[in-house]
Length: 89
Image 1: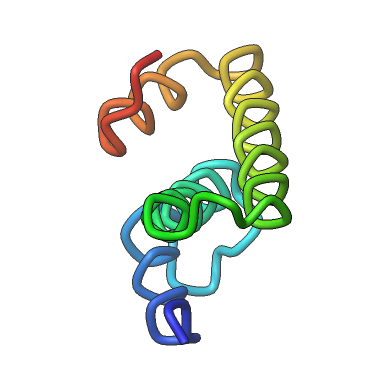
Image 2: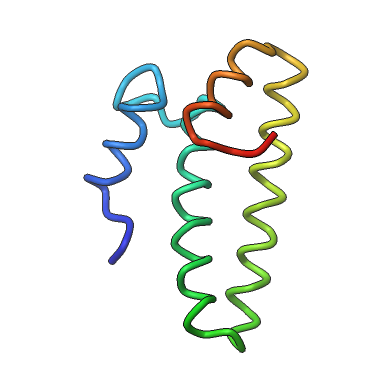
């Protein structure tokens, strides 16, 4: 499986406050970004997989909502996570 618990712990440790910090917006955005990149690669190979395409669209929307939330609450944390993940906005 592409996302096991060890990989999740690594993502939460790098972008969250600690490796048990699974609920902060930064950790969730990082996890969604990892999943989005994996699904994007899958869709490059399987272009007719419409259920995965819908799941990807929903994930992008969830990440966008979290980014908007973080932007409204704390602009410095927003800028830091966008820069760390290399997102466009």
